[in-house]
Each structure stands twice: as structure tokens, then as C-alpha cells.
Image (tube, rainbow, N blue to C red; front, side):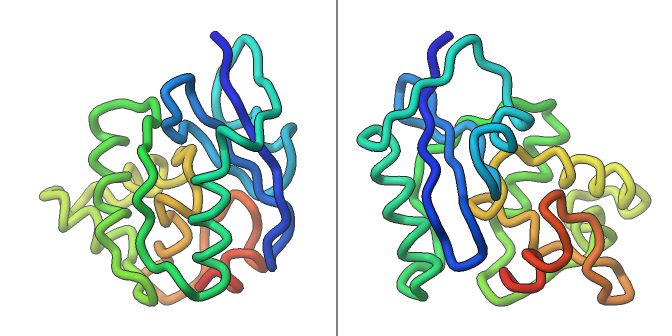
Length: 155
């Protein structure tokens, strides 16, 4: 299956976005194509800045302080539980954080904080689905695939 990507600069480093043939975002990553390919499966990935222009525009606006909510079409592959966690992540307001336990409680299973953490860690669409807004119950910046420094900058 052919999919498309672009890589561009942001204030916290290179950022890549992958899209399906319908233009839906299927993965994002801080870094280039190698980091992006770790987050989704594809037979063929073609560099196509034109197809990725809307995603690039919204992400650029976000880093410029002109956007707080993304309107991109998303199409992440995951289990129903992962999808529920990723949907909950999208409800965390800009400038706020939640703990894994708070998300587990929100999802109706207060004892599922570790499962929420695993689902958060498998989020293929970082930044747009704000997994960086989840922190430890003690306020620590735990569990961000691209490192604590980038997470700190995003928060």
C-alpha cells in the first residue's frame, strides 16, 4: 500500500508526518523518515510535500502559537482500547496535563493506569494526539518516545 510523507523543521527539531491515500494522518514523529517508519507499516512511502501541506500548515501554526486544536483527519490503527485512550488524549486542553491514573479513571477503569500508559506509548500520531500532555502522578515527565527534553518543550 502506498503512503505519503513529509519532513520539515520545527522549533524542537525535524518533524515528519505520514498520510494515507485519502489524506488522513496515520503517523507522526520527531525526526525523519526512519523515526516515522517505526510508527506505522507501509509497503511504499513516497515523499510528497503537497499531500502533506495541510498537516505541515497546522503543525507550523501550532508551534507559532496560532493554533491550539488540530482539525486534521486522523486514521491511526489500534485496538479499541488504544483508540479510546487516544480519543481521551485529544480531550486534554492545550496547556493542561493529566496523569495516567486520571485518564484511566476518565475511561471508567481507575486501576488501568498501566494499560493507559502502554496505549499512550503506542500512540502513532504524537503532537496532534497529545500524548506529551500525560505525566506521572507525581508530576514527573515520564514516558515520551522522543525524550524528556522535547516533552518539556512541548508542555
